[in-house]
Length: 522
Image (tube, rainbow, N blue to C red; front, side):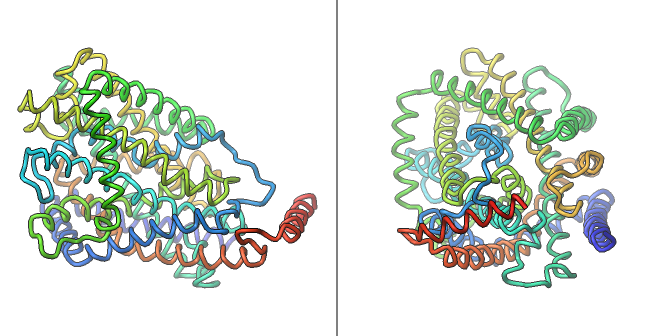
């Protein structure tokens, strides 16, 4: 136990020191800190843009390979393990934790932004409209979920099938051997905690600002740091209570609520918006997205300055942002995916969120652009209020706006709930059931960090930590690459042992299942 306690203390202590230093610098020198972090993040985008594009593409096609290969028959757990959650709840939980709040806030604002400043087309033209929708699907489609999926697969396979504890470092044992139990493993876990804290703190701060923006637009509530602090305090109580109640209750119920509210809002946009135009463009945009998937996955626009600048502001930024979110989303998805086969997991994680994103952005984005062309003031609104500006021009605007604020808050709570579970898990020996007081500590710490940043420099401080998220994502991408190699090495070795091919060795497979059952009975 002494060794475990030491490991816990070192991971917790080192991550706390690093985050504490960054927060202190951001609080005392917000402008300078923001400028330096922004400059480093810009340098990473300029220098490693090709690297991010390549890594995301390779991971995507590796996930597809796992899904169609014999390796896909392996289960994330022992052969007799059954899924803990019903399929619908499982899908809603993984989706809510992954990017639910992003869909609500940027469902209208990102297509509007691309329509005004497209990658290569003339602004505010039909070509810009087509590019806008195709670009959004690139950012919210297969690529981010492939990265989330590979982190989740590596952890779930190592934990549920190989008996490792639930730490990212332990997934690297096939490559690094027993060095994962020493300083190298501690460094990996510290980096995981650090990346998670940075990503979630930024999200909490931005979420408070955006909820405040919606309430300001709807009810004239003041837009200031005091209101944002109250919002953080209220939401903190809610997500800590949800986390305390346990994953099978709190997050599951909230995730199901999220999907119900999101479905109602989506249906409203489909009916109240230009329905036929949405359906036609959705079909066409999906075809264009799939047709250009490989090219856009690897295109860094070396000969097109306009597109290259656009990519640095959007695609490369998103890739770094998704990478910084992959630890906590991946760990959470792994936690709820025990008993699923690798093939089932890959199909669900890649296809379901992508299909929802296609439908969601088609309805919100095309309705937003259509409405904004009749009400041009919407183009000039900040992202926090653009969706509410669109809703204001639709029938039942007040009801839909209130529903949107509730949905935003619910997604907000779910993401924070998932994150503090992951932080508790990573700082409590990888246990699947971290103590309630550990989750409360992390919840309070994350909220305090977000509020300190709001007090320190408002949007400046948050933008600085957004840049820090991009910076932290670069070293973590190396961890993800090692996880991919480790997963393939371990799973392929087991595939060979079981004789899994297109036509499996049924006798050896039965022997393996019987052996696993006998071990469980003992």
